[in-house]
Structure formats: structure tokens, C-alpha cells
Image (tube, rainbow, N blue to C red; front, side):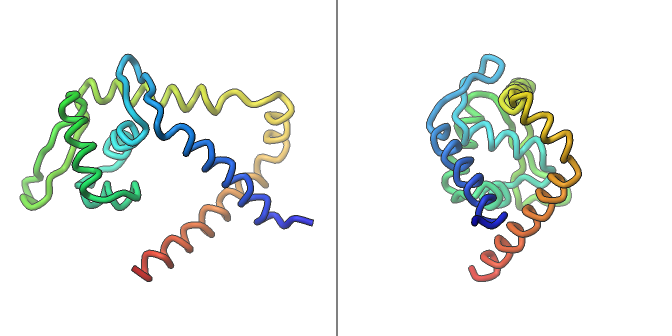
Length: 155
């Protein structure tokens, strides 16, 4: 008999397989063609105030060199701009342009549509068990964060 954690790991594995399959496919976000690495960089920048290259690279799990290249592509597409804070001239930060916000909004719409297609049975199950499912996700998130922190402290 499988444990709940084993079931969770299987679902996570299937989700990761889906992510891998979509990583190399460009998508259209409100008329703007972007790879997942590009749109997710925009999303991170829009959703996080302190978004210098080091922070972006660490949070997205890529090298600073990779982020530098992505940032250059996004600048060339006029999706973001660089700026420096008055109180911190050392770091360069980023902000989305109107065109970048348009892509961001297209990505939000994509996720809403992608995750808004469950079956009636699934929807009813979630509705009937919402509190339990929310507790399971909260526990799972904390469990995974603890392991990430442990790995970070070993670096």
C-alpha cells in the first residue's frame, strides 16, 4: 500500500514531466512569443520587489549567466527596463514595461485557462474536501521548503 507521501511524489513527478515537455515550447502571451524561461523571469520580476540578477537566478534555479542572457533578450524585446535604487547604487533591478505587463497578463490568463479545465467529478471532490486538501498542500509546501533550506545550508 502506497503512503500519502508516495502518492504526492508520484503526482509531483507527473507534474515535473509536464513542465519538462513544455520547457522548449514558445507560447503566445497576448501577441508576444516567449519561451517559458523568459515568461517566468518576467513573472518573477513583476511579483517580487527585490529582483536583482542574483536574486532572480537563485529563485529560478539557474546561473547568473543564464539570467543575464534572458534579461538581454527581454530588453531587446522591450519587455523590461533596468534601474538602480537611490539607496543602493550597487545592484541593478528590473521593471516590466507596458509590453512586459501585457505578456505577464497573457501568462496569467494562460494559467487560469490551463488549470480551469478539471472534470466535474474532480471539481466536486475538491469542493467536498477543500479544507483537507488545503491542509495537505500547506503541509507539503512546508515539507518541501524545509528540504530546500537544508540543501541550501549544505552549499
